[in-house]
Length: 136
Image (tube, rainbow, N blue to C red; front, top):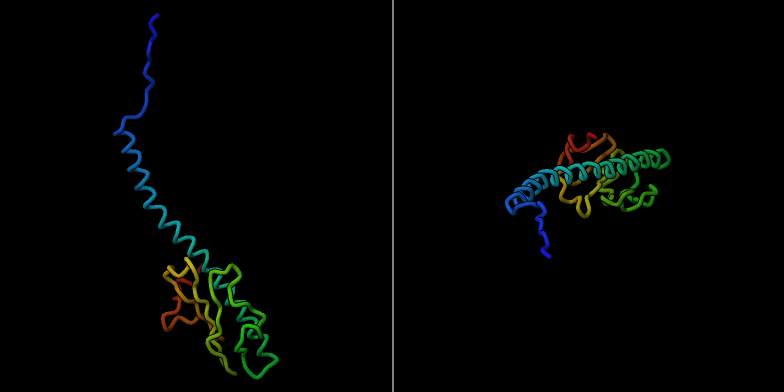
């Protein structure tokens, strides 16, 4: 009794290599784009935390002679709500303050780096995040 052997169609090595090359090209394009979108979405964490701190500073100033120098006085923690930024009061006196949100972890690779704001709004000098970083 003879058995009949049938070959099942499959992929050749060349077809497989072409497919892998296409996948590699698409991956090299999409991963940086995705990483940029993730970093941009995390910036909202810094902006939100700084806006909350600004409101708290103005509330503090209503009842005191100067703005608060400590995060505890504002009821704020040392980290932004999602933990991507470390919050810090750089300076504060009777007329102005400077609040900072410094990136942590993977967010340190973001081009915007440190966000800063004062009583007049976002501060873009001294290498702090520029106007394009503040837009959503």
